[in-house]
Image 1 (spheres, one colour):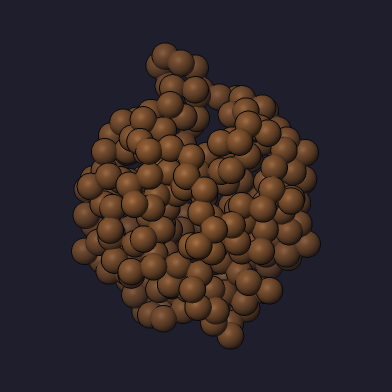
Image 2: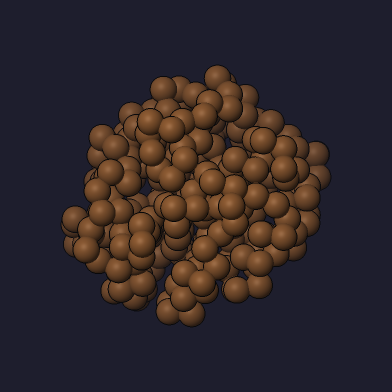
Length: 246
């Protein structure tokens, strides 16, 4: 199972939100470029980056910072937040972003999701952030009436790289992932599913792997020290990359 260390951006800093609440923010670093470089130096094989302000605004807000992080990391990076046009996607790909996570587009403009998937085959990830099983959009500020599994099944025929499935109630809470909901998503679709939200220790990662997830995003646990990168990778069945020659 792939391990995705997460760096969430707001105001040019590394932050984590509790349950997607912009008023409950913890700052874990003032230099996201240095954080990306440190994760890679410690052996991360890939990074998950979120432009929280971009997700809220519906357009890139920290594109220049993201480009510097990608260049500094030197490992494949996937990015979410504010990607709602082909031009935006093209600019990020040109800046070196490996995969793009799009969420609100799937609800508000599914034709655009189809266009993006065919324009960038294997590089678009469907981001499904669920609150009580329903998909939240626009930086988690609004909840649609559509079920996350239903949306996933509607788009699984597209040439997508996979699905990032986040349980908002678990995100940042360090209380364990929502395994029943994750298992339902994994069983429902043929696309690889990357789990996000609630991971606090190595056993959580092993349980995510056991339900068949293709990947696991880990954020707060790495920053607060309840997980080391090496320990998280071991639990996922990976090894961290060698310091040289990654």
